[in-house]
Length: 545
Image: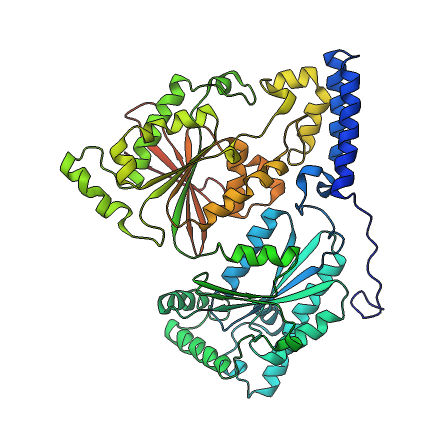
């Protein structure tokens, strides 16, 4: 039998340690080290800790006790089904936007996810440029061809889920607008053991959003050689063809067992049914944070600290004079970005709140300032907090949380990199080999930081107001990877220099990043360096603040 045939056995999986077993093993090892500590020198203890760390790094992430739900590089856990999310909706209703959103989120969570777009398969198999007549339900020959293309995409999705190690979620990005098509999807997936299906319907009634979506659709390969007016008319006719047989997902499908989610206007309203289970609840929960309102997120490290100047890891030192100068520049920069005039008179400042940000959100005017609990971030934020009028009238909401603290360096806190290389060369080499998974003795790994920062990333995702995050390099790398959709393996090498603001302009079309290097000397210019995930640091524009 083929891998997807009904008689195929399920692939054999190597047994993974449960969380309790991993925890017990870790405690036993730690107790042994503690007993040995009284009999050995500090150097000997360091070597034993190195050995323990190397053993833990050899386990996959799901065997580490602190990574309970993390999906990176692991097989599906016992009892978990792999998930097929089948999109439903008319063309230009935001289905592809939602799939990209989910792909970014689940990849950040560490799950293997891939999108299979039926339109791409059609263009590849039948060529681009079909007119609206090709999508007419009365055109039986074209209808059969479209069905064949769609199910070819579904077959490839199932093959990927079954045969690819670490594959967890396949998204079937197609219209799937009829009950018959959805019944076919359910029937086919039911013949593959361990596969669960949920439908995700995108409904859009916002005329302005629809017009923007139409404009984007007219730029794809189907219309690249068409005249703009002809292309728009044909595309509207294509939608009209789909509307003649469009059937929304109903509760009585699949004999009343159907799982589905419905999203109205990309997050304005959500309806969910039978969305139980680990993977599906992840998807359903994330949809509640999704919206398409444009917003800006500012990420910056604290100003230079005393430990930064000495090259020391961790610590809780104060800012240097240069670091405090950066804090003042950051205050001026944020005042400018938020529309606050430092030179305005008392009466003028009293009216600034009325025009602050130029718009209102469902959560009210204002902005959010987030800092870690370490002294260097609080000192960097201090100039922003000293002006009581600005704090009050700008609508500042402050979040002060340990979730943003720097990666814990454990026993190496206060060490320089040269110190670690001299005292624990094997630890130094292990971190060089795998910076993502390496965990400092009694400290954290980057994957641990991802787990810690994840709730805050969801909070920032939900926000519609501007957000300024003053934190630390590892934490900001994690947030930048989340919003740009950077693979976790590449996250530890993202560049987050001191005294630079990363301005993230987020819209329905993606995330644009500008690197804004603020001078710590007054009178110098500010340099904008525009970047994207594919080509960082593209172009430079200068302006005088």
